[in-house]
Length: 585
Image 1 (cartoon, rainbow, N blue to C red):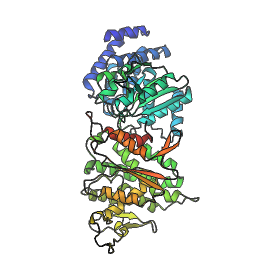
Image 2 (spheres, rainbow, N blue to C red):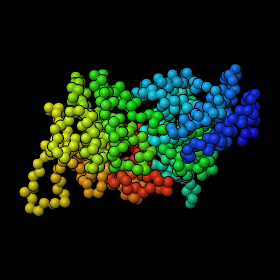
Image 3 (cartoon, one colour):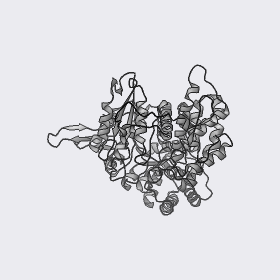
Image 4 (tube, rainbow, N blue to C red):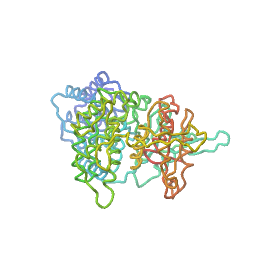
């Protein structure tokens, strides 16, 4: 390897090629030994070649600068993108040891960075420094690789990074378009195409169609983004695309060459199921959950609110959120813990729920010609109510008193006079007098059906404290077109509460489609069920009949079978519908 590096560096015009090749070789040896073992780390020949390519480009761009400086800067910038947050300090200290005394600034791309800032601001995003650094790293990888993987947990800002860079490149030069698909929401034959063994008929797959279209596209640059979990089957089929052949080979013998205006991009959570062969073929950018955190999300939301309102709400976020997230992490055990939450930026998701609840609670004040501004105490009461049902919504009954004590300590008096054994979960903010009121007062009195001789006891629904407050929360979330997830043991009246909520709507305005999942439900079954409930509007748009809305209720969403790689394929298509609002037919 050291000889390869020496020859390549000499070919690029480096005078000190032998000296630099040795440093390069030792650095990669130390990285393999000392950094943590992640599935997406690769210090093999393909990675080395892309680093050498960049070294050559930087030598040609800066012929007067010192070679040690250029080599050190390239090695640092090309590798930083893939490290998890914990490994970054260790890698920087290794670089310092191998290149003692050399200090290099980051390579800058003034026009691209200015365009990124402009596009991000237009989209209402915050110019968060670590997140913008990831955008620049993606751009650096984009220059030397045609297959790129953005790896990292949900809520790290991967999709926004990709869209911001595409927008910035469109601003600077040629138009860039992003086409998305979820490879796990469909079967492999539906993705690549199916050859009928009996008749020899060929049915084109979704990915094959997108690939052909992109290859024929002469005007625009096209990025095909595969947004879904990686497993060993579909990613291995793309090996010829990701290496230097750049050819998609289909089962009917067709070979579609990749044009220079195309990129294949992947957006998985992790690469645990990918083989080293795949990892080495793509440029990897790892987006840790620490890159973004919850603050930019809140800042973007406050920018959209009125000046007086955001001035009153901003101090509440600073006062409550960090102490409560810290308290929940140390003292409480939320219901949905364990494996799935390792891949999710948890703070980001719970603060996202808080913003949805707040938006719904404040909706009546912002409607009409004259939006009203509430008093600070009233805003704080609404804020505390929303914190209970977003950050504290996942807590079991044993943890709620602890959470309640922490909230009361932070609120310093803006809480109801509670009876013994009660928590803030038993209170809501009364709209008429803007004060706290107990939920017990809202539970309607239930009348026994005296007129029926033998009432069907199984179908009688008696409203309780729980059903009333959960229906109220459901109403809030659906009023701003949000989605809700009910989690709980069997027999806790989840289905009954949701059915009672759905039946409260006018059937002429709101349709509903209940779908029950089982271990045998496939993505095709879900897609057929949803397609059966909508009709064609215009072009490719489908929806419920004109003037109506549709609620889809999925019961037992945790039931579909896991495949060999730990993915629930059926829930991938549910995620695609929630995130992108559509499906491939």
